[in-house]
Length: 270
Length: 339
Image (cartoon, rainbow over all chains, first blue to last red):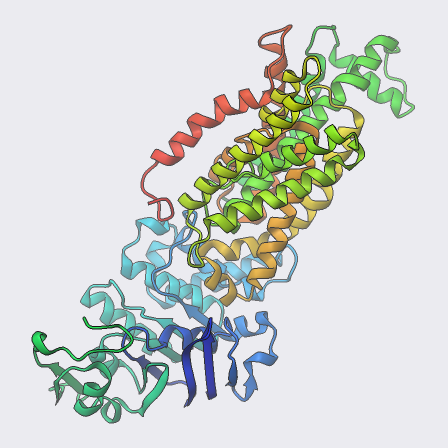
């Protein structure tokens, strides 16, 4: 599903979170959403998922404005993975995945096509290699397993667009790599907020870089992840090298001179 | 659990409820047999069933015991359902109409109109009291847009204490004769003295609000991972939350109007039943209704027989059973919600 973002602005209680963001995402590509803390990454994902309404501008999915669709219709097209959530009651992995079928059920009582739903859930768990943990309870799963179950839940929604908010948070390196490899392997249009620039460079087709609620750069990892841009946005010094095997850019950071940190007007002096 | 396993549990619970109601009607100072109970029903339906039931026995069954047992069943069902919904919507395993102050608010509203002598407005006043208490609790608990379980319980405690003090004060101020028993009944909850009017109020509330809530089971499921996740599953979060909490206030108001504030039914029943049905609401809610009814019918029968001829308010029995379960919930292995 292609996504078009036009002049999107959003504020909370008078504070601008996003200002006139415009971008487009091609069908079947994986896009990394980068930027420092507070840049507006999560908010942009919520707007793309139709959870928040923009003050101005619009989001279109395959040329259909998201604001013109009922919430359930949006939920059948877009799945969102939040960061670090857990259920309030101890659900099994299969029960979590079944939640993804909610937008497809009838309004009252839910459909009685329980077997179809179960088949979709089983397939979704298999697709993320989690068939062996179907009956395990959520709180007994490792962080990586929980994220895989969440992706299976998103797949059960049968979305055309997958949004992920820092999916690799709190995961060890092998879980990070296998998760992002899996996301790529799904072949869905995916947009994910990431903190790790190197993971973004290795796994994303395109990068959108946000800073202070504005889109400051968009393009391939090589176009966006340049020392001058990274210095502007993050205030750090780095070199870019080519990965000896993958060929994608690798960012190597220089140690920071902590006696002369740049002052950030929004966060005060560190 | 398989669909079949659930069906067996559900069927067993319904049978147990019917049996408990029938047996409860037979228990008491006057000798009433199961045959009398069935016979009394048959007479009402214009059928004859064995010997005619003596008129005195018939009126004990029909005017005294049956309204009380049915009221207990409806109130238990309504409170348990309210608790299940509140726990899911607020994502708080300790939510229940009693702990979050709704019951006490409803009692205060009810006592106000009783004192004013406009008893016909009792259910409406109880509903208003429950709604105000709910609103006050959630407003106090809300800091920076989020409500943690701990803050919700603490502000519920404050509101419940305030409303209970208000209730006691009003009854004390207007005290005549043995009004202390009345204070106890409103504060601790009791279904003594239930009439067919109590049955109609609690039964109608359970039927109308209960059906609405059970039909929303799928929407409740969607709240498992919180508001954002529910919204991303296509749920209109705010409208759904306030509709459900409003329904709960209505249900609690109706139940308190007939029984005062009975605690812990709404807290413990959903946890116990979830262990049988699993967390999915399409299974949880119907079973919680039946088990809540069963629980309060048994508790009320104990309340009026254990210290015969004296009668305990049933809220004392539910507290004796509920508090240990409450402590177990707090001590239970770390959960993501309660820390």
